[in-house]
Image 1 (cartoon, rainbow, N blue to C red):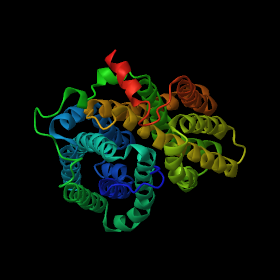
Image 2: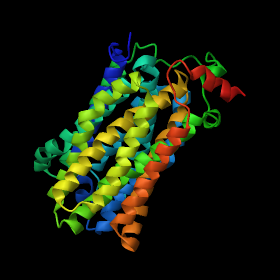
Image 3: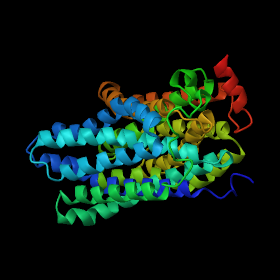
Length: 407
């Protein structure tokens, strides 16, 4: 049965539902985080540092998350991680000062790393080999939809005060943990094997993964994607809109919404194409489109041109994102590899942290054109590397990749 027609396992839909719930809750609370910090009479820098504290703790705790996954299993780590985020978020609603707020958000970052690594590893584990691209696109669509609806719902929740979004997110996280705990309690895929029962060949170490050329290229690709899509897009683009087009936050939101719209249109076809055409053509094509978009954006003469450019760039990102997760699934091939998934997540987060910092420094020193040019060059480098890297066509070429690891 082809990947595009194969019925996805119920575990996939449970994880997608959990991801959608998390994204919805985060979309509600995200705008309130810096505003709530300002309530403690701190500077704008200190308020924005709350976001950085969460991201930093996600980054540094990713290796720990991989270690926990390998020892407790994906399902338990998922539930524990998401409950850590839930408890820290609920407690943040009761924070009495700035220091408490920072610490609680930092603890939430640790739980978020555990949840993210476990969710990715578990999703890969339950994905049918012939439908890995489709599973990745469905999962991405769930997060995208939750992220789009969250800010809309957040306006209504914020009416009850700045603490209300944190309570709402707490409830959403409890729901997500409950969905996965109940839906996957009898799943053989999600069950942790008894200690000592797993064979050595059933686990792929990070060192062994680094000897696989597709994994090395994947790390470069997710770093470039994190740098551009999770970093520069959400931080530098709104600044350019304000400086170049004299637009306010609403106009910047429209530009970012255009990117999301382009992503939404191709995210489902991209999953099907990954399972039929292959990962490599879509990764290369999407990266080229994305790089061209970042080159063209600062040169746009009118705001409507900039919106169109971001729409096209969003379509390019839809070709790249599912393919990256599908390649990771091909490499693991149903094996346990918490450290492999953790490095994948950590590399993406590192790009998201460094992208805004480096691009912002370049804007101050040389202007927007150079900042977006460097971003485009990084994406283009990933595209060229994919051209030079052997393709993965699961499950046909996986034995060759595994043999390369053993040599």
